[in-house]
Image (cartoon, rainbow, N blue to C red; front, side, top):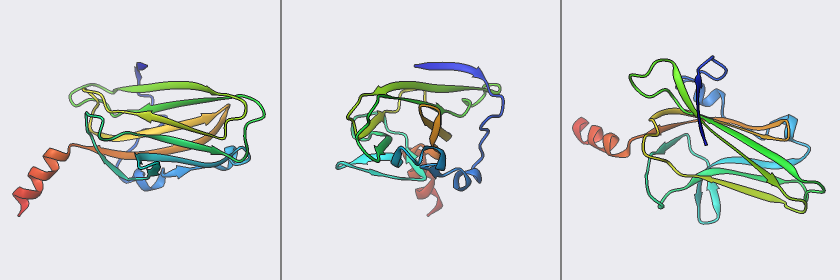
Length: 157
């Protein structure tokens, strides 16, 4: 689901903020969530990365994984928002991808996968994930064009 909204500065990010906002498993969600990670799914694991190439096929999937301390005794609502940078040439309007799922009783882990879509912009992305109202992930990463980076590297040689 996509929604356009005015960028009111709630999470205006710049590249130096990447390291400052690489927060996972916050203390507010710490009682319920043992592990909260965001990254690339690879061989059953999730690899955290600071930069990610924008790929439009099934060879790469990214998302987040939540591991609860114990199987849930009641269902929990998990909500997320991925804030994308404004498209080049666009005014201060950004696109957010929103999602929500209810994790059923007895579940101990949840993986939520995202794939890039045509039109997704390059630049700094940020994801915020909440379990009920507890923030468990607030993290930024850089999405780049791999072909353009390879070309720039060849030109620099």
